[in-house]
Length: 84
Image 1 (cartoon, rainbow, N blue to C red):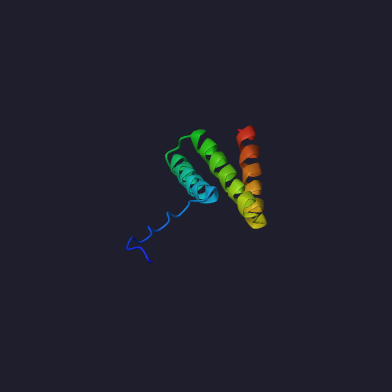
Image 2 (spheres, rainbow, N blue to C red; image 1 turned 60 degrees about the horizontal axis):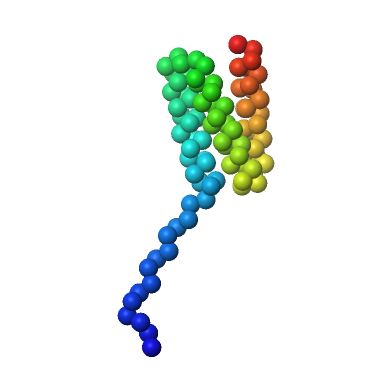
């Protein structure tokens, strides 16, 4: 006999990569804003955090293109930070 009670829809699960990519994107946007407002070295710290987050997203997705571009950008940011 069928029940009159309908099953509730399952909640969608949010992956760690989804949360990380949005957090890293927001942090990078804050880095761009900090650069526009002349907030040095906070802009560098924000960019480093955002680039690291996006590199980790590339690792989670096993996407070498994302990993490559962000590790190169990360290296450039670290080199620029140490030279200043």
